[in-house]
Amino acid sequence: MILHKIKSIRTNNFNDPEMFSKVIDLWSKSVVNIPENKIRYGIYHNYQSDYRGDYSLTTAIEDKNDMSGILIPDSNKYITYTDDSNDVSKLWKQVWLDEDNKKIIRKYDYDFEKYYPDGTVEVYISVK
Image 1 (spheres, rainbow, N blue to C red):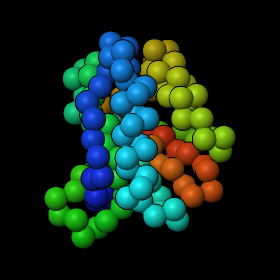
Image 2: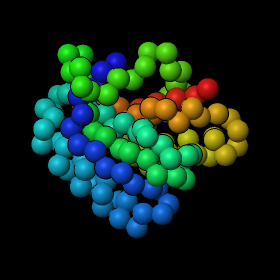
Image 3: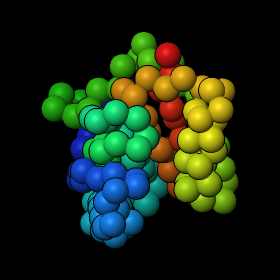
Image 4: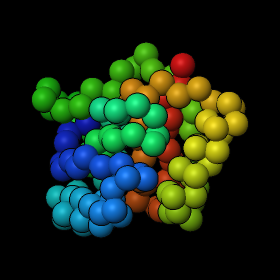
């Protein structure tokens, strides 16, 4: 899958006091460039270490013709977390809990959130 990059930030879930404002600002500046009926993506990549380290978050849309976009390898294996309440933080807390409890072994390659126009959210976690 090739995704067209809209905007990116670098942050940390635990050590960046501006993380929430950076993410909110990223999405608010990105959605104006994404048609309402398009699926939106939040791509997590360039991990420093695990979920406690720095990472890049990039907003994107699908565009198979964008050769400079982000290529999500077809060979990656994913575990999918889904929620229709649009509460993505609840999904990430479950991912971290599952990782801490050794239910999943993350690859820390490309993880992504997929936002459907109907409000459904899926989080794809790359696993070994």
